[in-house]
Length: 317
Image 1 (cartoon, rainbow, N blue to C red):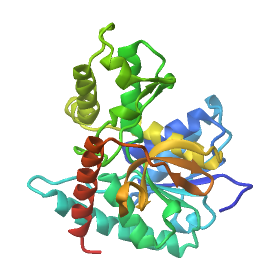
Image 2: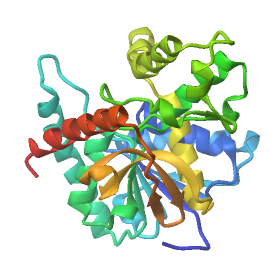
Image 3: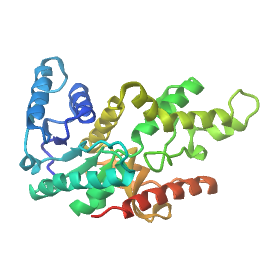
Image 4: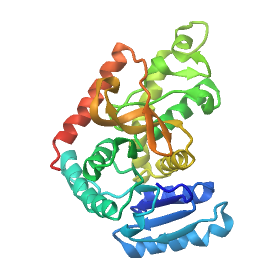
């Protein structure tokens, strides 16, 4: 990975990809060069033009253009937001298999270009597609990252901040596991600043209760369904989550984010990619942080690992 340039390649210029690109341009100073790649080259060119025309109003001084896979050679990060939608009557495994073939057509030319940076995957189901990227690319695990439960965690902190009337930045809480139906909130790890929320809930002198926490957890888990029902897709939130991860990498922040990372003994897992708090820096995943989960929480995490492992095992790579 180069150190004097900050170049990002985005593959897939749909709503998720372009929400990321738009956030990247408007936040400013994160990268110097953004390349857009799409199977629809006309669209990629149009999106690049549209972004460039707004640069006069942005904080960024960026070079933005539609490119080819050969442009990945000297990139720091390749963000994958491409994929196919589920067809009516199609099983989840069928969708996974089709997306796997799409990823094969992407990752092969990216690697062939000489790319030696970090893959950041946003395509759903993100944990499995991140593992597919790892298997197809043969990159080191630290350099293959999925957006994981980063957006779910942001949703959780927003809702908890609202519940406790506290700035969400002072809420320390994580959604872990699959980015999907088996994800959960380890309540034992939730902190309001330095105060244990579990202890606050057990204190009968205030109006807080565990039932409310269960409702908030369900809100987090079903948020995407409600957004999709209202507007057919979700893209702004995940676009901003991708931007946050890219910023952590290029800024060598060593920030803790709940990304989809490969387990190598942590939480008793090996090989599976799953949403866990991880230290993210210039070289990708520096460390997976192992939380001290209760027995009940560990059981939920194991179920989530099993869901992901079984789905991946059904694929033909």
